[in-house]
Image (tube, rainbow, N blue to C red; front, side):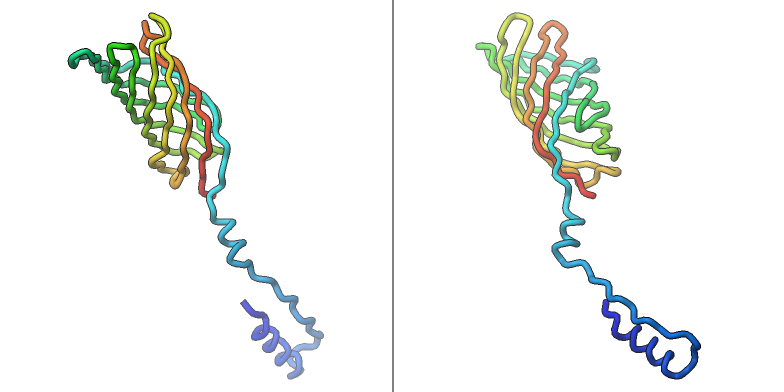
Length: 183
């Protein structure tokens, strides 16, 4: 925006004697640069860390496929930290005869991030192993695929690492990484 046209009109009105007061020129206002506009619209990067805690299993199916055991399970839980709220996960675990396993799962969270609320959907994968008859450990990553509500546009990749209490089937795992949240 330029101030030349409004300034010219004001000076024209002042010079015609239509007003009894003198008119001071208007100070020009600098327009934001493209870099300033882009920076204001760019997603904010946040370090993210916290914990997922499964609190219950709502469905489970176990079957054998040769020497492998396949578990399909739906669980609910709480997520705390940078991302907080309640979640449901649907997972498929393939346990090999040697005790090593691979898990693929989806997580749907009713979450709050930086005071904004919405639904977040993640896909995750991890690899693990039994370390005792009652405990398994695992590590992998979760990728934020989609978010809605005030969290629309949320993206990020989180490293996950945790344990499974074998008797109960419930896991607790920490997450850490970087997320991008639109302003």
